[in-house]
Image (cartoon, rainbow, N blue to C red; front, side, top):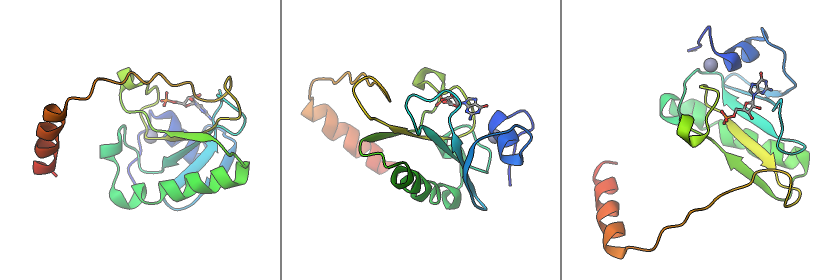
Length: 136
Ligand code: 5GP
Ligand code: ZN
């Protein structure tokens, strides 16, 4: 299993740094976020070290969302956001892939989202569709 000696989340998985562990399996680890945006804010991570989503093998990725779902049900969150940041400009601070499960109990607590929508450009969307599909 890939791990990085310098990585804070790899240290948490190994138990070298303590955490409030919620779940552990062969490939997945989940724990409470140390600076929560709301009560129940949790992180679900692959044990495999990788900075971005594309660095994680599919078999590990496939096991992450069912654990997010378990946590939603266990916390009783009715409204919630699932977030996974990649890269500094996209608000990633820890370079080990993690899915946030963030309950949204009210307007003030939980994730606040800016949603800077752009005008619809049908021709642009058609060209983009063709471009992306040709590379999948
Ligand atoms: P990011 O901005 O990278 O998506 O989120 C990183 C998250 O990891 C933050 O919400 C932060 O509070 C959390 N975090 C950072 N260091 C630790 C730690 O040592 N323990 C725990 N439990 N959470 C951490
Ligand atoms: Zn790591």
